[in-house]
Image (tube, rainbow, N blue to C red):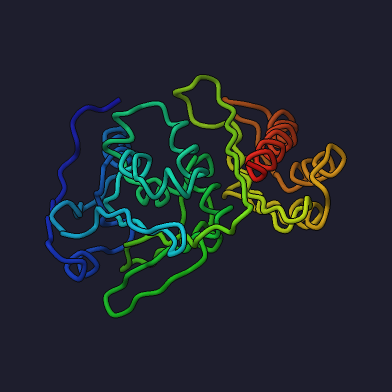
Length: 289
């Protein structure tokens, strides 16, 4: 690994407007926590002409909300900050459970959740829970602001819907319905390693049946994936062994994994089935508590 960074211009603006006026596609990189960016700059995987830091822009490190008003967090909110937030602990157990699978406290203390998403790795542990909870992404441009569903944010490996003169300022998560339960599952070589496969499930039960289900899996396609056929199959059904088995098999069909140094495609596909099955069972149990 290269230890010395190649020369670049460094900017520390104090407003969002200044930031968006400076950003310009791959020529300019935005620095939040820097966990991924600095490593890739050292490896020469990213060689930007300019780096724009968000650290001196006030008001971006918030985690706000409650059970009825939903949750929102800004571009400088760290993973550790979100994990330890009262509103997240009380109302968004799925997100907290996913962050807890990132074992490095240093990474969580430095790294931001939005930075994690902007890296656009399909192995993100943050993205599947946000898919399952119906999160939206706020994107700020020089003259406009837009909000898109998180499913539209990821385009390909390492690519997002952010334009050349835009940055992500906020993630918005709606309130979760009563009677809901959730679970996050992750398979990796070691606790410190990134996911071979991960899965996030959110189910809502009413009168003993599944009223709604959202299932998202990661590290099995170029982007995180919603297993919509599996969701539809289990809606209206009692969450028993038969319905969960059928839904988890359909979830595996939604996966289009590759073989790489960490796992084979066949193994990943089978583990989607197993992780989704276990997550559905656990989510159903939690919904009844």
